Each structure stands twice: as structure tokens, then as C-alpha cells.
Image (cartoon, rainbow, N blue to C red; front, side, top):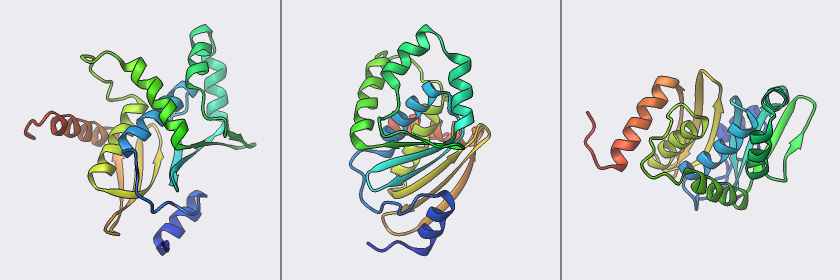
Length: 195
């Protein structure tokens, strides 16, 4: 399928070409939450993510990942890294750290996450990276996005996506916007009316 000019420009700017046009087997919300859990363990909170074919590619400043791991290293952190380490396909460069999450990587991370989440009555922390990515993924699923990029910092997220109908959208979300989307997601999933 031919890529639109918008995708080529966006892919060029973010360094990921081509961006996938294929349908997603696993919901974006599930994939992005699993990726978020992996990035939380690494202490990465600012990054660019793009979906290429069935893989998700993440680029983060290597200094942030190195600083976080040096500051937080301890027994529990070491154990967590054993279980939540990024996929083997991790690549490091002088300035940018890259992670390639394949469907198999995401399945493994998701299974580990489910076993850790185990508590059915626990209220998720809406301000955790994994929950923020889950909320963004849920929005992408709800909008029927087939291609997407996410740029996330501690202050906001920029999400660009194309729907299966070919409509292209870009939105900037603040922390409050993410919280509002989380509330709507939980209300929709519990079949409660929106206020």
C-alpha cells in the first residue's frame, strides 16, 4: 500500500520509515501499556515511538536512560530489570537509544505485566507511563488507527495517526487531557454514562 506524503514527511522527521499501514492484531492499548511498563523500569519518560509494520520502535535520549539506571540501581531494581529488560534487539548509539519491540516481545512483556497486575480490585495509577500509553492506545483503538507515532515528554504527548479510512490526525495532549481520556476510557469500559 502506498504511503501518503504526510506519512513520509512525519516518518522522515522522526527517523522511522516506512510507518505501517497494516491492521493491528493486538490492540494498541495493550501493546503500548506493555511497552510503557518496560520503559518505566528503565527510567525512560521522554521518547518518540512509531509503529513500523508489526513492530513498535522507540527512540530515547541515551543520557536519560543511563542517568536513570545509575541513580536507581539496587537489589529490587536489578531483579525488575531481569524480568522487564527491553528486547534483545536494543541498539545504543552515542546520543540516541533505540528499542525495537516485536509482537513476541510485546506478548512476553504483556504476560509479565498481567502477572504483576494480578490484583483485580486495585485502582491503576493514572499518572504512570504505562497507564498514559494505555490511554493513548485506547484512544487510537477507539479511533480505529492503523498507523501512529507518539512523542512523549513529562509535560505532554503529541500523537499522530491515520485511521483505516485514511483520515489523518494529530493532537497534543497535556497531563490533564490524558487524565480526562483515562476517565472516559474507564467509564466506557464499565458501561457508565459520561458526565
